[in-house]
Image (cartoon, rainbow, N blue to C red):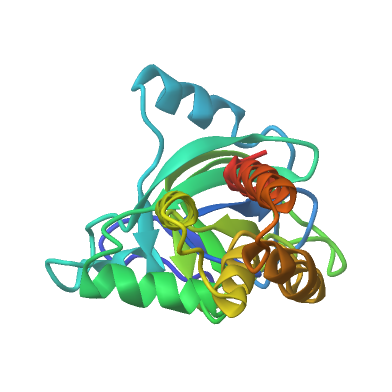
Length: 250
Protein backbone atom coordinates (compact mmCIF):
# COMPACT_ATOMS: atom_id res chain seq x y z
CA UNK A 1 0.00 0.00 0.00
CA UNK A 2 1.27 3.50 -0.84
CA UNK A 3 2.16 5.74 2.04
CA UNK A 4 -0.06 8.80 1.66
CA UNK A 5 -0.79 12.02 3.52
CA UNK A 6 -4.06 11.54 5.36
CA UNK A 7 -5.57 14.95 4.58
CA UNK A 8 -4.80 14.92 0.83
CA UNK A 9 -4.16 12.39 -1.93
CA UNK A 10 -0.45 13.20 -1.81
CA UNK A 11 1.69 10.14 -2.46
CA UNK A 12 5.14 9.88 -0.96
CA UNK A 13 8.01 7.91 -2.48
CA UNK A 14 11.32 7.35 -0.79
CA UNK A 15 14.77 7.11 -2.35
CA UNK A 16 17.83 5.74 -0.58
CA UNK A 17 21.05 7.73 -0.56
CA UNK A 18 24.60 7.95 0.75
CA UNK A 19 25.91 11.05 2.48
CA UNK A 20 29.47 12.37 2.63
CA UNK A 21 29.50 15.68 4.49
CA UNK A 22 26.58 18.03 4.90
CA UNK A 23 25.72 21.59 3.96
CA UNK A 24 25.42 21.59 0.17
CA UNK A 25 24.56 18.32 -1.50
CA UNK A 26 23.48 16.71 -4.73
CA UNK A 27 21.62 13.55 -5.54
CA UNK A 28 18.49 12.03 -7.03
CA UNK A 29 14.97 12.37 -5.72
CA UNK A 30 13.74 9.69 -8.13
CA UNK A 31 15.17 7.24 -10.65
CA UNK A 32 13.57 6.53 -14.02
CA UNK A 33 12.60 3.01 -15.02
CA UNK A 34 13.23 1.52 -11.59
CA UNK A 35 10.36 -0.22 -9.79
CA UNK A 36 10.13 1.02 -6.23
CA UNK A 37 8.86 -0.73 -3.12
CA UNK A 38 5.29 0.22 -3.96
CA UNK A 39 5.37 -1.34 -7.40
CA UNK A 40 5.49 1.94 -9.30
CA UNK A 41 7.85 3.01 -12.06
CA UNK A 42 8.46 6.66 -12.90
CA UNK A 43 9.05 7.23 -16.60
CA UNK A 44 11.40 9.76 -18.15
CA UNK A 45 9.59 13.02 -18.78
CA UNK A 46 7.25 12.63 -15.81
CA UNK A 47 8.64 15.79 -14.15
CA UNK A 48 8.92 17.94 -17.27
CA UNK A 49 5.62 19.80 -16.93
CA UNK A 50 5.72 20.24 -13.16
CA UNK A 51 9.26 21.63 -13.25
CA UNK A 52 8.14 24.10 -15.92
CA UNK A 53 5.34 25.25 -13.60
CA UNK A 54 7.73 25.69 -10.68
CA UNK A 55 10.04 27.68 -12.94
CA UNK A 56 7.18 30.09 -13.70
CA UNK A 57 6.87 30.66 -9.95
CA UNK A 58 10.62 31.42 -9.85
CA UNK A 59 11.18 28.89 -7.09
CA UNK A 60 11.52 25.16 -6.49
CA UNK A 61 9.54 22.76 -4.30
CA UNK A 62 10.29 23.01 -0.55
CA UNK A 63 12.93 20.84 1.10
CA UNK A 64 11.39 19.14 4.13
CA UNK A 65 12.56 16.57 6.66
CA UNK A 66 10.59 13.30 6.68
CA UNK A 67 7.89 14.94 4.54
CA UNK A 68 7.14 17.34 7.34
CA UNK A 69 6.23 14.52 9.71
CA UNK A 70 2.72 14.82 8.26
CA UNK A 71 2.71 18.33 9.83
CA UNK A 72 1.96 17.04 13.32
CA UNK A 73 3.72 20.00 15.00
CA UNK A 74 4.44 23.64 14.22
CA UNK A 75 8.07 22.83 13.31
CA UNK A 76 7.33 19.91 11.00
CA UNK A 77 6.29 21.91 7.96
CA UNK A 78 9.20 24.36 8.15
CA UNK A 79 11.76 23.70 5.38
CA UNK A 80 15.16 22.45 6.53
CA UNK A 81 16.94 23.66 3.44
CA UNK A 82 16.58 25.12 -0.03
CA UNK A 83 16.73 23.31 -3.33
CA UNK A 84 19.01 25.31 -5.62
CA UNK A 85 18.80 23.10 -8.68
CA UNK A 86 16.39 20.47 -9.96
CA UNK A 87 15.92 18.85 -13.33
CA UNK A 88 15.63 15.64 -15.30
CA UNK A 89 18.67 13.91 -16.72
CA UNK A 90 19.14 10.42 -18.17
CA UNK A 91 18.93 8.79 -14.73
CA UNK A 92 16.12 10.60 -12.98
CA UNK A 93 15.24 13.72 -11.01
CA UNK A 94 18.62 15.27 -10.25
CA UNK A 95 18.60 17.68 -7.31
CA UNK A 96 21.04 20.10 -5.74
CA UNK A 97 20.33 21.73 -2.40
CA UNK A 98 21.63 23.43 0.71
CA UNK A 99 20.74 22.91 4.37
CA UNK A 100 19.81 26.03 6.35
CA UNK A 101 19.78 27.11 10.00
CA UNK A 102 22.79 24.96 10.86
CA UNK A 103 23.33 26.99 14.03
CA UNK A 104 20.05 25.74 15.55
CA UNK A 105 19.54 22.47 17.43
CA UNK A 106 17.34 21.11 14.66
CA UNK A 107 19.82 22.15 12.00
CA UNK A 108 22.74 20.66 13.90
CA UNK A 109 20.86 17.38 14.28
CA UNK A 110 20.12 17.07 10.57
CA UNK A 111 23.64 18.20 9.62
CA UNK A 112 25.24 15.67 11.98
CA UNK A 113 23.04 12.79 10.85
CA UNK A 114 23.76 13.47 7.19
CA UNK A 115 27.47 13.90 7.83
CA UNK A 116 27.59 10.52 9.56
CA UNK A 117 25.66 8.92 6.71
CA UNK A 118 22.74 7.76 8.87
CA UNK A 119 20.27 10.21 7.32
CA UNK A 120 20.87 9.67 3.63
CA UNK A 121 17.56 9.19 1.86
CA UNK A 122 15.72 11.44 -0.57
CA UNK A 123 12.00 11.25 -1.24
CA UNK A 124 9.45 13.05 -3.40
CA UNK A 125 5.91 14.01 -2.51
CA UNK A 126 3.60 14.32 -5.52
CA UNK A 127 0.18 13.97 -7.08
CA UNK A 128 -0.01 11.37 -9.89
CA UNK A 129 -1.43 13.11 -12.97
CA UNK A 130 -1.07 10.52 -15.74
CA UNK A 131 -0.28 6.83 -15.32
CA UNK A 132 -0.78 3.43 -16.89
CA UNK A 133 -1.93 0.50 -14.78
CA UNK A 134 -0.20 -2.85 -15.13
CA UNK A 135 -2.30 -5.72 -16.43
CA UNK A 136 0.01 -8.67 -15.73
CA UNK A 137 1.57 -9.94 -12.48
CA UNK A 138 5.09 -9.33 -13.76
CA UNK A 139 4.32 -5.73 -14.77
CA UNK A 140 4.68 -2.70 -12.47
CA UNK A 141 1.54 -1.70 -10.60
CA UNK A 142 1.68 1.66 -12.34
CA UNK A 143 3.84 3.43 -14.88
CA UNK A 144 3.81 7.09 -13.88
CA UNK A 145 3.94 9.27 -16.98
CA UNK A 146 3.26 12.66 -15.42
CA UNK A 147 3.33 13.84 -11.81
CA UNK A 148 2.79 17.11 -9.98
CA UNK A 149 5.79 17.58 -7.71
CA UNK A 150 4.88 19.03 -4.30
CA UNK A 151 8.06 18.66 -2.22
CA UNK A 152 11.32 16.76 -1.98
CA UNK A 153 12.39 15.54 1.46
CA UNK A 154 15.42 14.23 3.28
CA UNK A 155 14.25 10.96 4.84
CA UNK A 156 15.40 8.02 6.93
CA UNK A 157 13.38 5.15 5.43
CA UNK A 158 13.60 4.84 1.62
CA UNK A 159 11.69 2.62 -0.75
CA UNK A 160 13.68 3.13 -3.92
CA UNK A 161 17.19 1.80 -3.44
CA UNK A 162 18.68 3.41 -6.55
CA UNK A 163 17.94 7.12 -6.08
CA UNK A 164 20.46 8.62 -3.70
CA UNK A 165 22.34 11.56 -2.31
CA UNK A 166 25.59 11.52 -4.26
CA UNK A 167 27.67 14.19 -2.55
CA UNK A 168 27.61 16.75 0.21
CA UNK A 169 29.85 19.64 1.09
CA UNK A 170 30.24 21.76 4.21
CA UNK A 171 29.17 25.40 4.32
CA UNK A 172 31.86 25.96 6.97
CA UNK A 173 34.76 25.18 4.64
CA UNK A 174 35.11 28.77 3.44
CA UNK A 175 35.41 30.05 7.01
CA UNK A 176 37.89 27.30 7.87
CA UNK A 177 40.18 28.13 4.95
CA UNK A 178 39.97 31.87 5.70
CA UNK A 179 41.04 31.21 9.28
CA UNK A 180 43.78 28.88 8.07
CA UNK A 181 45.17 31.55 5.74
CA UNK A 182 45.13 34.16 8.50
CA UNK A 183 47.09 31.93 10.86
CA UNK A 184 49.69 31.20 8.17
CA UNK A 185 50.10 34.91 7.46
CA UNK A 186 50.48 35.58 11.19
CA UNK A 187 53.28 33.03 11.41
CA UNK A 188 51.27 30.59 13.51
CA UNK A 189 50.12 27.89 11.03
CA UNK A 190 47.90 25.06 12.31
CA UNK A 191 49.53 21.85 13.48
CA UNK A 192 49.81 18.90 11.12
CA UNK A 193 46.76 17.04 12.49
CA UNK A 194 44.57 20.13 12.20
CA UNK A 195 45.66 20.60 8.59
CA UNK A 196 44.95 16.92 7.90
CA UNK A 197 41.42 17.34 9.29
CA UNK A 198 40.91 20.39 7.10
CA UNK A 199 41.88 18.40 4.01
CA UNK A 200 39.57 15.56 5.02
CA UNK A 201 36.65 18.00 5.43
CA UNK A 202 37.40 19.34 1.95
CA UNK A 203 36.91 15.85 0.51
CA UNK A 204 40.53 14.67 0.21
CA UNK A 205 40.77 10.87 0.80
CA UNK A 206 42.19 9.95 4.22
CA UNK A 207 45.42 8.31 3.00
CA UNK A 208 46.21 11.25 0.73
CA UNK A 209 45.38 13.81 3.44
CA UNK A 210 47.68 12.05 5.92
CA UNK A 211 50.54 11.98 3.42
CA UNK A 212 50.14 15.63 2.38
CA UNK A 213 49.93 16.81 5.97
CA UNK A 214 52.67 14.64 7.48
CA UNK A 215 55.23 15.02 4.68
CA UNK A 216 55.00 18.24 2.66
CA UNK A 217 53.03 20.41 5.07
CA UNK A 218 54.88 19.32 8.21
CA UNK A 219 58.20 20.11 6.58
CA UNK A 220 57.01 23.44 5.21
CA UNK A 221 55.76 24.89 8.50
CA UNK A 222 58.98 23.95 10.30
CA UNK A 223 61.32 25.35 7.65
CA UNK A 224 63.42 28.46 8.22
CA UNK A 225 64.40 28.67 4.56
CA UNK A 226 62.92 31.65 2.70
CA UNK A 227 62.63 29.57 -0.47
CA UNK A 228 60.81 26.74 1.27
CA UNK A 229 58.60 29.21 3.10
CA UNK A 230 57.61 30.72 -0.25
CA UNK A 231 56.95 27.24 -1.65
CA UNK A 232 54.85 26.44 1.40
CA UNK A 233 52.76 29.57 0.86
CA UNK A 234 52.22 28.65 -2.80
CA UNK A 235 51.31 25.08 -1.86
CA UNK A 236 48.80 26.28 0.72
CA UNK A 237 47.25 28.64 -1.85
CA UNK A 238 46.91 25.78 -4.34
CA UNK A 239 45.32 23.51 -1.75
CA UNK A 240 42.91 26.25 -0.82
CA UNK A 241 41.93 26.66 -4.48
CA UNK A 242 41.47 22.89 -4.77
CA UNK A 243 39.18 22.91 -1.74
CA UNK A 244 37.14 25.72 -3.30
CA UNK A 245 36.73 23.60 -6.43
CA UNK A 246 35.51 20.70 -4.32
CA UNK A 247 32.92 22.99 -2.75
CA UNK A 248 31.55 24.08 -6.12
CA UNK A 249 28.55 21.91 -7.15
CA UNK A 250 29.10 20.17 -10.46
